[in-house]
Length: 239
Image 1 (spheres, rainbow, N blue to C red):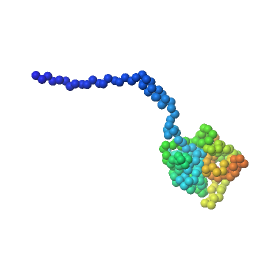
Image 2: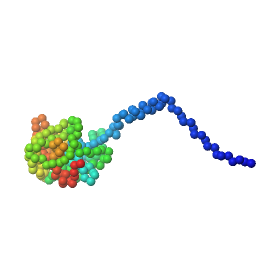
Image 3: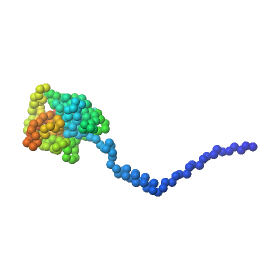
């Protein structure tokens, strides 16, 4: 008589025991990995007011302020500067430039500002200004300036320069037409810098630099498009 035999179940293989030195080396590697700084590619990359963007035509303009609409992020800058610079915008120097956004609209002449739509998700676009001297300045509101009020320029390369608002409702004529309702200050702007930039008082956005004369060693005059009216016209808000 044939007796049925139960199927054989193989025993699991015995676990391999690691030598103490191997265990110690693995633990040390885990600790060193946790303490190591993040790789360069993993670090936050941000575009702030005062930073320079490079248009596809070769013209460079400075961001004045970052703003938002319907969950999207935008840059405000001088319209006269941005008019011939786009439509594609890049961030970085000649060796590391990456596409950062596209021209949304240029409001010039009549007014003097442009809206750039940020399209690169690998960057952040905080409501801050680069100063070139340390911590960024957080921008929390926009307001119309008054004569005698202080206005400062956050310049990413030369630091912060301040002056007083000296005139309101100023007009400037260009070959393309007249720009109205600007304001003027005694704050200096360095010649040769990329066009535009932010004018602010503390955390309050006041103006987008649109024109200037003189230099910081000898003094000068700077003209601004009011930020509050630019935000209203473009349907944007600070965030």
